[in-house]
Image (cartoon, rainbow, N blue to C red; front, side, top):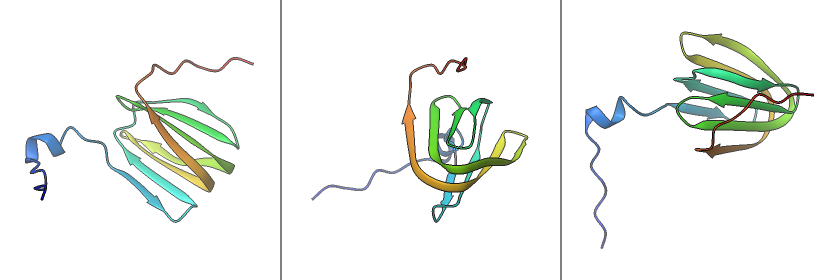
Length: 88
């Protein structure tokens, strides 16, 4: 039987908190930059990359490293690749 990993407080402080309420709101701490935002895609930089896909997406709050995204969220993905600003 495997033992559960023990995480100390020093490791928790370096982690980012991401809270998803149903499929309509995402709250995240530790956001450094909004790389791209339109009604179907929001790309955030926070030491790693978070991409949110959906419909009617809007950034409802952005400040002090916190971000709130509302809309119909269909997927959230994470990557370590550097995001670049999308040019049209």
